[in-house]
Length: 80
Image (cartoon, rainbow, N blue to C red; front, side, top):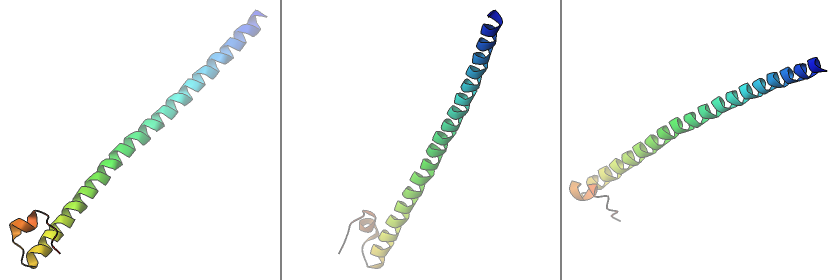
């Protein structure tokens, strides 16, 4: 009976170690996904800011071509 109990406890210890290793692996994958999301979000934000800046430059350029003063055109006025 004593040997059976020791064997059962050894099996449980092994199963617990395996579960801990699985949880550690899942945690590592979750951390990688979170890091990747943060990393890609910074690229998305940078891209949106660049597109907005290019759009502003294009609007300013169009206003200047229509004869609006460059200073006024740079103030982002919407002239109809």
